[in-house]
Image 1 (cartoon, rainbow, N blue to C red):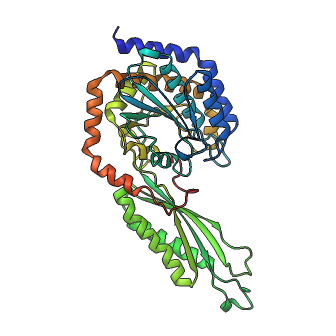
Image 2: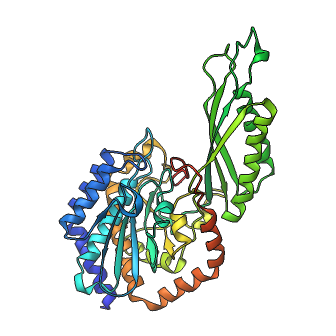
Image 3: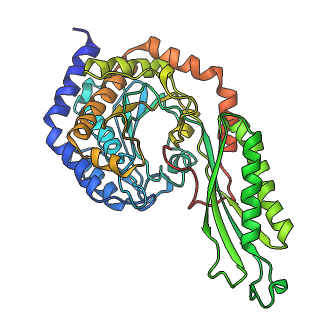
Length: 418
């Protein structure tokens, strides 16, 4: 048996031995869903497990109160293993972040149990606000992913996939302000903020006819007025703008901005247009590492759905994309529900705490830990991952530079996985 094979067996045995503890963490987080930037209980639960294992932990890491970091290992390449733990408004853990939290925790605890035999270093990171706000981008700006050799996490889904098809996304909020008046007696005295928003909405609808197949624009009216007989003096909307790359996203954002400005110009209203502080970038998967993950997951009995058979245009967004443009990364999907159950659906939340969800927690932790061992012990894999990353390093640097707006709004941004 090779050194790597022996270490893999040891971490898998450790995860099996911790299974009751890990599944308890998953169910506890699932039962107490918390929104982005407010995951105080989840962070407490996870960091308490690190304390119990005798691992160092920094709470409130990298500028975010609900982030944390733990580092261990004395030598060799450094791999980041990530946990997410925020939930969705109204439908709880319908994205299965309780599973993401547990796989990251389980893999890290198992690797730590190798002690001096660990052939590398681990940076275990708790990353808040994936569903909204771009927590990983905010952490990256504070150095969370500096000087890493690789980063990895696994996301629940209805099928196993070697990677998640992802495109860039930027979120924008618009507020129009006009002047109220009696809609029947003196409509000429009003400036209709609803007309401004509808004009912009229709302009965006027309713009959709003339964008690339890989681009998306969709939005909602959040506030449309108070009564039909009052000219609305304030309205607001929220929109997502998506493109295949940061280079394509930037000009599309300008075209959408023009639609919002047109609504104000046409009606005489004023427009407050606020883009997110952090855009979510496309996912740059390190296939050298992803292939290792797939082989390890298959050794656990997992069967992968071919990416070539994914429906055309099916792509989501995640702030793990922002990490992947800084360091070789993987973001595979692990089945915790039947294929017909999609994430961001109330039914998915039920499966995230089911027997299939529990199996995903343990299999995902094992696959991540084994992949980290492969990366630490296989110099050829590391060189391949590094070389592949370098091919598009200049483009990635431009993407990273475009992903952050210091004047943007921190309370919006992204849309979490979908």
